[in-house]
Image 1 (cartoon, rainbow, N blue to C red):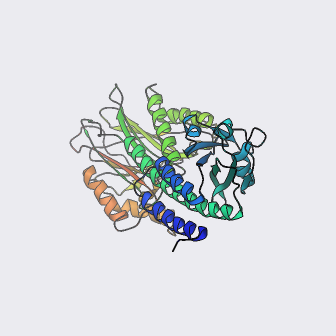
Image 2: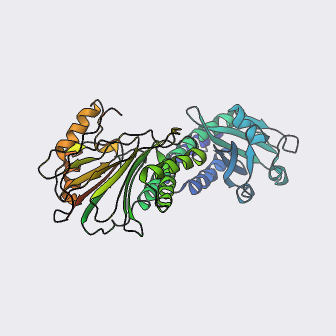
Image 3: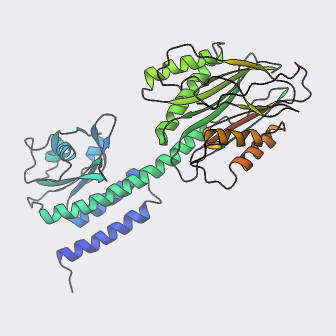
Amino acid sequence: MRMGTGQRAEAELAQFRALTDTALTTLDVDDLLTELLTRVREILDADTAAVLLLEEGSGHLVATAARGIEEEVREGVRVPMGSGFAGRIAATRGPILLDRVDPTTVTNPILWEKGIKVMLGVPLLSATKLLGVIHVGRLENRPFGESDVELLQVVADRVALATQTRTLAIERAGARLLERSLLPEKLPSCPGLELAARYVPAEGKAIGGDWYDLFTLPSGQLWIVVGDVAGRGMQASITMGRIRSALRAYSLLDLSPDEVLRLVDRKVEHFEIGTIATVACAVTDPPYDVMTIASAGHLPPVVVAPGRPADLVAIRPDPPIGSGWERRRSAVSLPIAPGTVMAFYTDGLIERREEPIDASLDRLRAAISPAHPDDVTASLMHQLVGTTTTNDDIALVAFRRSPASPGRAPAAVEPASTDH
């Protein structure tokens, strides 16, 4: 028995849903959309189908995938919100039926030059967020009806879900690769210092902007940087990379860490408007017996020397990068006796929901010891994280001035204020 039009469409939709489920695990966004549009043409008996996704920064719809009118993608068609057929659909967030396709009804010449006679388009929405537009067309003068509108909207909902899910997965993977590519491939070799570092991403969460950096300058000066860009996803990772690169560049000017942070802040204020980042920046010269530290809103490093209790470095946390701070930034210098260990970290290491920050920092002080940095990082991660599911990335750097290093006698380190 032959199926009617409605039954056939329902069967096609069932296959379409199955396709979106399986394709999500294997295809990138462009290939996924192309595959979905092939099925959309079959479901709606259309000759052309296209998806234009919203480019949020510019407010334009960009032709991303097409079947039957591949020229839209090849020519990089861009449609302003509110302009043309697709632009009106996006602006009104409602369907539009066209019974005539010519320069009076559409602004994209490809559509009428192709010979399309009738068109139907609906918005791609995720909850209240506009993702783009999907439209179909026929070369015959056979108008779409209200039942086609309902059918395309069902398809559009599935396309929007599949597109957003796959885009987020790819963005997460891309951000992870970007973030890891910006971490040092290996730690610098500094005679008289022992170094260790760890980076652990949050479990099952979007990528953040945590990072650490260790590098030496031609003079032998060692820089240790740990920071955290506010936000999640690819943009946070990209911004983190820009801040990291700027800081490295300014360090070559032979400036103090507080002055380098001032210049980084100035660059961010001008080129990365809206960015907020905390950064702890430390510098030491051979024989590494004195360290100068500046903080832009970051948690204070923790330090412990043999025979002494662990303390937080008493440094004033100036406002974060990007906060509009115009006054001079501060720094503190402290002697580093042989055997002294210091650790820099991001808040994912210590902060726990519903725990006061003072209690978190007390746990940190209790967990650190003047051991080899490899053992220090392992112990901190075990005692402070362990089986806890972390909601944030963790960057951790530890160093120890070799116990045999000659230098000054130990000096007391004042505890830092935890009011930040």
